[in-house]
Image (cartoon, rainbow, N blue to C red; front, side):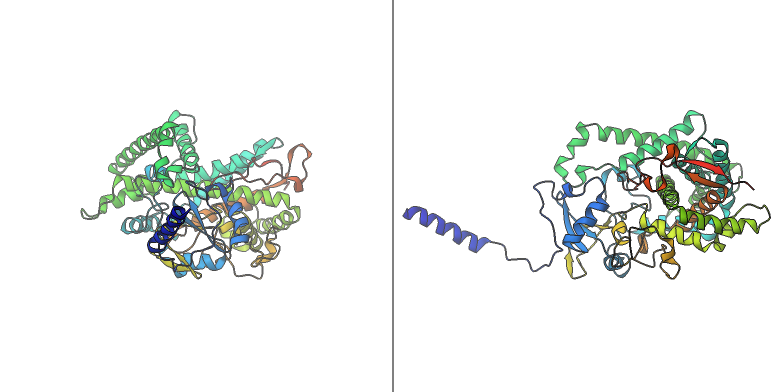
Length: 494
């Protein structure tokens, strides 16, 4: 007994002398984490909803752990303002995630690149050569033509059931393809089909969870289950396509063709760049892929949710149709164009309300903290991954009356907008890492919505009532409707 007491006393002495001094840091509240995986189990299939639920218990700033990686989730406008404005530079970088790193040529793009000189150079090229006001205006005929083609396809399908989701995907793909590459990629030959399939596969892979990014010693799983080999195969197909594309455009440039699209502009910039600061081929490839990844899926998703909400809310649909058709009536048979969009305040309100309820990226792309900082009274360590829950913020009952209702009228007496200056809703992000292509995307989006509601009345197939329309979300970092938007269209009689 005496020996046991001595042993216990010795253990207490060891703990007393060798225990670490208590940390003075005030970390954000955190739920219980499991060994090895941490809090990954709490993310669920729709993390934006899971994190909103957790924030009600743990607060506007909470700390999770994905494996060994600390993850800070911000769920309030105040926290978003700190991250995207007040401390924007500190929060400006991106984490290096293996799948993204491979597809985007080791972070040579803009959306997923770490903050630094390479990112600044790439963003400058995008802003000046694709998303400047002059360039966005130059693509206006493309948006007009492709939107008209979509309307004609729908008219030819009437009175059969129309898959609006497919129509929107085709529209956004074709507009972006023509703006970036000068042609569409949806024809009958194998090369065109392969390119669309490549893009689809890249998006599918990027939306999957790679455990090796958070639990390094489990990285072997993707080698065993074949995911790593699949990533490599898709990358090789992508790079082969991009190499052929660059050869094609260089041949065109050698024949003296004018600069008409983004690829042309990047190659011209490459030719003009000094030897000390060249534009590498991998940068051009990554920026082209970036534009497709950011410009197609998100805009298609915004169109899909907007039309679903309008169909589900017949009163709102009728008010919008009345506004759009009144503008059209004053044009004496000339179709609606982008100049007319400024005459449609209710359309602007519908756009804002849809983006508030359904931000295409409910969780803004992750940021990585490049130094220790304090966020709303909490100490956040350098290297933490930071997620802003845009979806939770735009449904915050402290900011929005009846936040789950689709009510565009709420914006009539409000200056709040989606362009990154108001943190009550940030569907496109804000600050340095905000989306540079807002004007390009919204021009296409608003033109498509206005022409659709002008030309058609909408119903649901099989006698489904508007209020019973399925609004279930599909998993993914870009959140689509789980089921496609199937409608019955009735062309408006003139």
